Length: 212
View 1 (tube, rainbow, N blue to C red):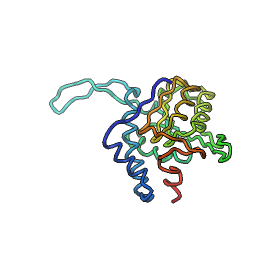
View 2 (tube, helix red, strand yellow):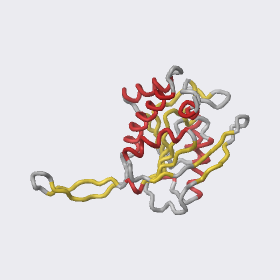
View 3 (tube, helix red, strand yellow):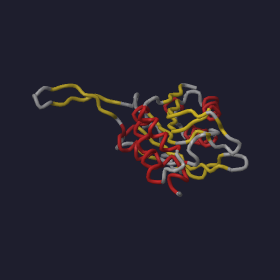
View 4 (cartoon, rainbow, N blue to C red):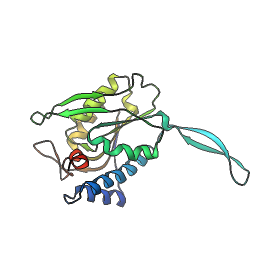
């Protein structure tokens, strides 16, 4: 795998504590996911596409500046839970485009099946693609999304997978099939249980964001 980055920061730990707590209601859970999304976005955009320009300061001095080219960034949330990170990223990348990939999981086989693909026909204008999926568990949904992206012409090296929780099994599957793709996560948990959930994790992130 190109790289796996695990965030190390007290602010990250604070949000993880709120996400893990079964007593966090939907408002607390959403807020914690949003705040964690900001921190993930800062890390993800360290090598974002940029240009240069000049401005004049209040002292009348012209000075060169760096300009973020966020219009060349595509956000791809995996439905449903990936939507929980979109607002965080858009608040920092207001010109970024958003395309959705919907993947359902067979609860018996854990097989991932595509049911939504709103990717633009031409991906050549995007220099970075961020796949947003809070839970990288088996890796099946993420791999399906990466397959769809690369089949549509995306370069795996330009893609970053952004998640809140991950486990070794998911990281290994993404790494074995898409070694050029980077993963950024807030934490790597120790266990993938027998029904494909991250443990200790935070439960079903999609349910906690939208249903409970």
